[in-house]
Picture (cartoon, helix red, strand yellow):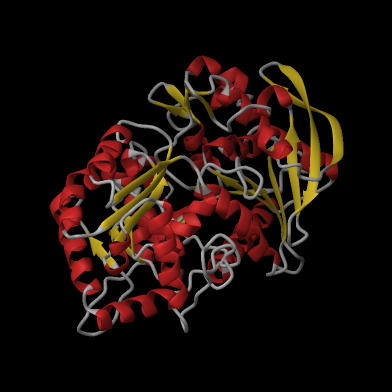
Length: 493
């Protein structure tokens, strides 16, 4: 396009300010890659308690912004700070909604007013952009929490002199989270009553903010090419495969990238010793340090050490892990698990840890420095996911020479290639069926390759050479932004 694109990047979580999962990493790193392409990207998220606790330096750029919500006007302030690359980050401040211990859930489940909270955030984002005169070409929305934005643009603000030219892109990070709410809450969302029908935000008699984003956005993306295909099938579409098939012409998968500035074994402040592809001595030091930190037996230094770092959910394949864990120990291997969240899997994991204290270590809770130490100290990274939109941890593992063993689904399929000891090609191990036998077969194969020092050195070298930086994905997003902006411009002529 003749002028630089302006993009408002709207996400419910963004590193380093607020994080529960990989969405925050994407929202915290992709904008920088887009700015390097000359795009004016500004990020917006709620002003959570965690942002205040981190003492992020901000200035108030708008006070008392009125936001129509559920028949009344609520107010918010808008704060701003600078990202490390000098990009602008905005925070929507309304303490009644966002000054809480957690982002989405309390200890007793999801916050009961999540629809009101994120509908307010979505509408406030549009109104503060207008108030500040940031005439964005594209609003890039992420996950159900921002689903109202495309619907607002196509209904309430379709004739607005400032917002009518703005296009929207909606990115699905996980179909498992659909923003489902009772129909009687529709007025509180601010969405017009005319949107509540099967061709709108209605989903089996309820409201779905995810569906709002999918149906009303100018383009829909998800975070890997394979996942984009999978979610149009009953197995992975989670009830929305028909809606996604309806948008197939505007649906694409763009593989997530990572920021190697934060995940780099040559300069990682969290690990016991630095190392790189040309000198792997530090990895052995990291392995021994991890073994001792986790209370495992020292002799595991010469045996394969497996690791799993993820949320403690069914999605991540913990049921498969529990089925094979005895056999894994029987291969004279070790296992380190770092899992966040609580579930029915916690008790059996603890039972195995108590039964095999020299071989199995389990830590529950979010611990970013420990995640780095595990990535550096382990030999094999497990990701037996039931489904995986993209996944970032297997990409980090590759850079750290920790070989991924994954189920071939979503982004795991797109980022890991099966290792062939004969040709020397490949970066990891993969199985297709969500089946404990198939999983164990690849675990056994990985141990066999580990025992072949020459073959193992080859797969480690292959893994560390893999490049999943943001450069290529950012170019794809930039091309999509331009396509949508041109289409919007053409439709107004």
